[in-house]
Length: 128
Image (tube, rainbow, N blue to C red; front, side, top):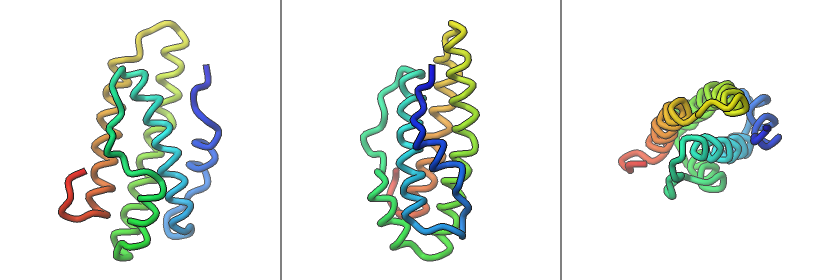
């Protein structure tokens, strides 16, 4: 079972903070949103409707102070770093017939916290 769209791997493998523009970060953010939906499905939770889409994150990155933009891009890289192996593990467990819900819930909560940190960095004073 391969539930991950190829765009996730393409968008997450080539990103290096400081060497790419906000468009690539936006594409990566959108790919992470798709990956998060897979995790949410396995965790049996509804995805949060307040998730900033790729267009919005691009606008936030462009409007952010350079230091905030740099840290947000690093945050997006960090999220990708734990989502890729996490999803592979969840899909492997699921393919073996084991219930992935507990592990998926842990990954989902980690993702939600990391996503909120990136949004809070780009939207100071606004809870994500």
